[in-house]
Length: 392
Image 1 (cartoon, rainbow, N blue to C red):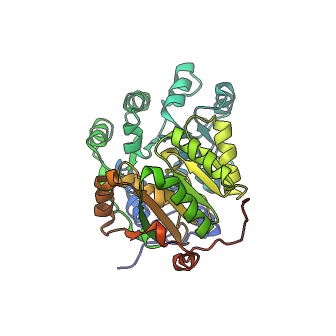
Image 2 (image 1 turned 120 degrees about the vertical axis):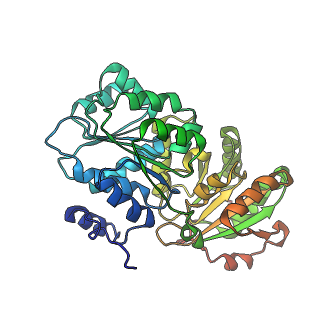
Image 3 (image 1 turned 45 degrees about the horizontal axis):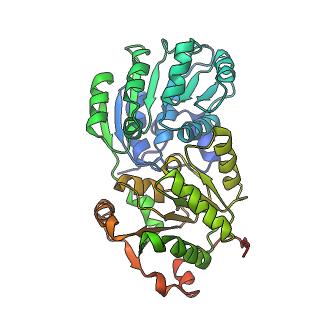
């Protein structure tokens, strides 16, 4: 069977050329399944993990239909986090025409400034639910002529308690809109939302992509909470990651670990929900520019975080569910590169670990902390691209 291309799927030549400039020539499975259905005008429920190319799956057909000569909001993309909203907006900017205007609307920025930009005739709005409702209440945005609504990462949105907000937003949009729902998992809540707001939707599923995991070597160190910090520092000293994301369960644990890493001489910073948006953006930019090498984060950074060159992901605290594990480790091994994911597990983590191994359909290779030596570094094949010494 011949694999579909963007051209054979009928994507406009101008968009195909922009994709080529980004080095994207082949469609991913979720794009191959979604784009024709969206172009035909169907509502859609797409079950697909982060990292499968779902953003372009909905953006390409939307950008073809947006008419820059019309001043109203024509497409609304609702995302659960500021990070994801910004990430989607960046993808829009890469593909849109010069006369098509897109705006990210999220908390942590000046409402009046956002309102002024909205009055500047945004054709595509990418928004978090709470801030979008603020603008609806202020009458600084109108959704009564929206043609497309995308609910991105719907499961995460509902898990975060946004169901009333999403319901309110959907009620502000026309009945004849085209609604596209993308979700890593189709939970009962997601099904209920879809039943309420989608009309005879087509449904597709892209299996959990083993492709995204084949480039990621996964290791597990069995330890205790008390020994975990020393174990992490030992491994980081051995591996010397070029760029690494270290995931903790809570904001408090993030701050505590970041302080310990700094004390040990590592060039690290922290990312969590208590930081102002300006601070979060500054931290992320420093990480993208490799001005800091190690980012200690809560799961707020797991989705929508797309940074080239991340060689290692550390699960300092094991994630609460298998989906989060996939999202976390997917921060490395991107764009065809290789990555290493290292998870620390205490005895109490065994049930969660069992679920993770069931989902990835294989056991994670066990390693012992006491066996670490300089020779072990060679086994990982994940040496940094350039040497960056940290203070001792």
